[in-house]
Length: 313
Ligand code: NCD
Image (cartoon, rainbow, N blue to C red):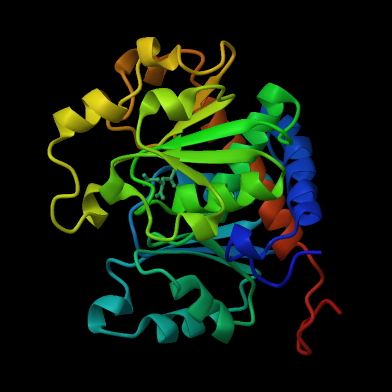
């Protein structure tokens, strides 16, 4: 069950996903206590190594580690030796020599967490690499849907927007697919990935078609920082064609829920009204992000250390 690192949902088997979700569901209770801390990871060290900006993911990994009583270090790339041109791998190896129990990596280039994982003793969790994968986000999304629908098997999940540039979409396509849901995607043709078929999803060009019969509607942020050249005529046109509001949501099932990984471009992917009110579950996603990352840290960094010089074995 679960290898040394967590680099992508593509690498996970369904029972591993189920185990993570069950563990996360149990962790949610800790967040409702007056004293939100348990000693599970006391004496363990978690390093957050974020080379790309983050609000939700970095903060929730930090809170998750602290709720489990781990020592959490946020490595800030500004002010580090990276500004003296130390390579990423040398930086990572330097941190590894301080014996962390887990290193959480985000980078704008796909594959960097894997490169780092290959040279580190410590387990690595991918917190988002370029347009490749964002496994903890997909897992918290699956947890949120499970809480709302009591199942994942047999659901229809519509993912809308900038699929080609979205690591969230890719991880969710793998995850919901492995858990037995039907995943559909829609967006402007230039925002659909070239390998749609190999991902095993059906692509739609209209919102009405993709929403027909959908239980879950996931809107994605337009990744302006990853768009090289103009991929769509204008933001206003995108909002008119693929932006979700309450009227367009009527194409989906009556009890459909609306999700977004954040940050939201309000009035583009989602109307203000939908961003703030049910059936949107955006803040449930954020809340679940803490419990889910507690589960990951527990399952990945809470294992007995195998290295020879470990003082514990
Ligand atoms: C996402 C990301 O960074 O990949 N945000 C997040 O982690 N919640 C999605 C995005 O930036 O659009």
